[in-house]
Length: 122
Image (tube, rainbow, N blue to C red; front, side, top):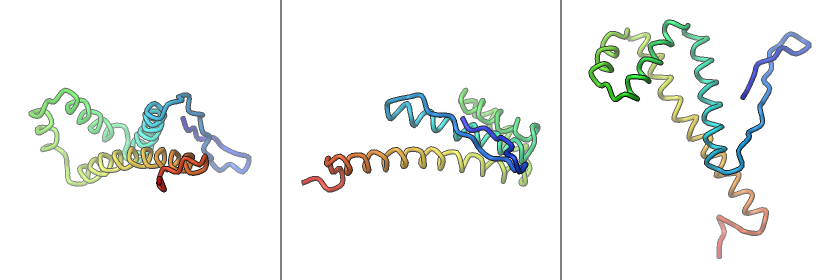
């Protein structure tokens, strides 16, 4: 988990929580949860609780596969709000991909540094 703390100069800084998992899939899942939490907090701060409630409603309706409800709520969203909401849903998969890419890069680096050359196999 990443928390914002004020340092001596009054400037906010980020502190990191150590990941608890030991296998790759669990680590990626934890990283994704942390990144999703950060995205939610930042988006909520930028657009406010009321507008963010629309995002939460869209997520809930999607999970229930309530396509009629989704169509109704999406039809009622202004173009300005739709811009923000679409950016939220566009950024989320990018963060997930970054987490997976970092894990793969770590694995390749580890294998290459332990003479188990993953990229340069004979």
